[in-house]
Image (cartoon, rainbow, N blue to C red; front, side, top):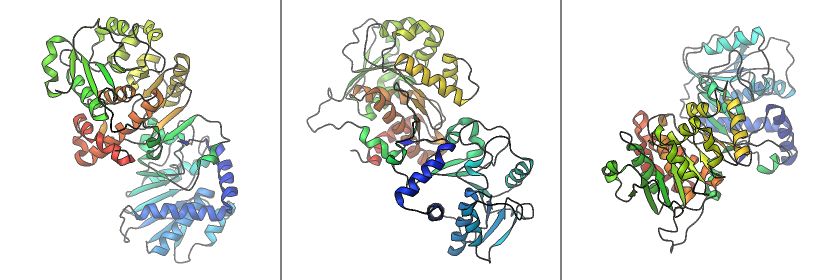
Length: 487
């Protein structure tokens, strides 16, 4: 997995990379610019599209100047707006790229530039160099860029946004942010959604061994990381080998949660799925004929490989939850009303088996741990909880945060804006329970479950767009295995 470094560490990483590759600074900047242009050309922008590149005096500005030059040589109409005054001190690489800018490119200060009413503005002003309150001239330049009527693409970070902390003040409101190497922490925080737009992570050649000397425990989960986490099953495997799972789900008026969880568990690969539901609701599972039903809350739970509890369960089921947890030692998945019962009765914490997986959304998280000022505070609370109780916690949302029992925190890269609809959490519960039941470690079950859930949302979202439903996502789960190279 890609480790996420702080702004103060990135300069050291760059030097490690340059030494390893034998690059000069300028050559590396040229490579970064070319990678950006390669990505840009895949986006289908017309060669008639007007492009304004806004550059600062640092290396982010140097990247922008190199990008402007390469795009110009390809035939795009380019103008450059400098976000520094004549005579300002530039970084050496920024100065070199300014000197290499073709004379045919109009270059003027942002204050004197006339922003077009359409086209593309590339924000290469501040990058990761931004920290602390902005100077007044920086605020004015950002306001000017935000007045642009076309598409704004931020390079590495929207100008004004700090790399590692919560924004205080204003920043460029990008439609797209193309970040270099790995996402900076601030790009993964929900507080910054209006500034980031769509996030693109651009591979600029960093490799895993270059991160060895950095001690952070925050990571970014990508598609290439997931295949090695999976178990493989031979052709003689039978349904018992693929896991016998129990889902404690559903109540009067909420049986859709049971249907979604059960279908998701089967589509994820479970061999046997049983649902513990109210007997009077037994007909509700007729749409999942493969699932078995039981109705006795006092049964023996030891025969199941994994248990998922909570979707649609009802807040009155706290005693049922305590009874189940007190009789088992295997990790379980707790979601929805199981978490709400836990919030109401903290004595349940000590009953949760080690390695279990909790899956709150933001409001459920706040019920469990109290109001948090921002996502950074939630991250700290989640980590402390997981270390204290040896649990895993999945904080759902865009770039879902997986806090693991060993202290690592992993942001997910997959997902779609169209997944913000009812039932998606029920699906995730079924998927996580399925992976546990198939014999995955709790940590691998978390990472595989979260990534495949998001990827299925991406695949189904391309077809259904704003009409995406949880059932559509379930039907896309098998395609996610093919996508990562697993049949």
